[in-house]
Picture 1: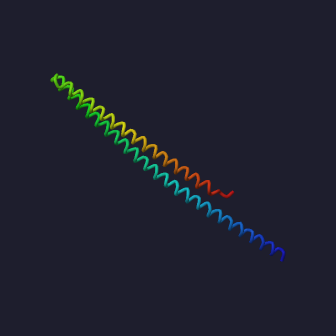
Picture 2: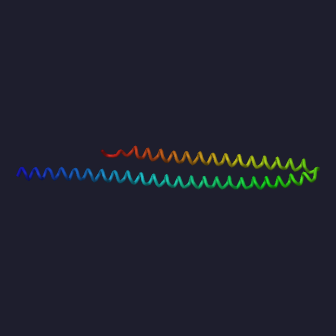
Picture 3: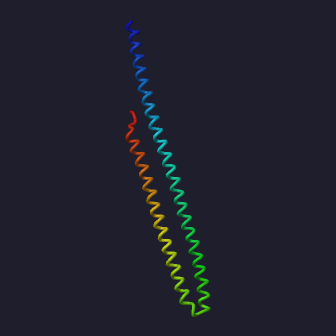
Length: 142
């Protein structure tokens, strides 16, 4: 009878340990789900950042193309101006205005690019910090 009692006690202890292990597994699964969700959000943020960077690169490339075109137009204007001495002063003025305008456009786009980059970096850092806080709030069982 004592042996039967002992076996029953051992069985109850084993069932208790099994329940605790199931609870630990469920907690770990929950933590894993949170991490997977956070990872997915980070991946989406990274894709957004890559798209924004590509957009900025496209803008800069477009500006470079416009700048080359403007330079070619200026060069043509200079050639014409050298043939007509009277128009040289006016063409030089237009050249400077074109260059100044393009420089201003480039500066504006650079500022937009920098601001976008800073914003994306901040969003990325916030997401990483959010994940760290989520992970720190869920302590792993020993």
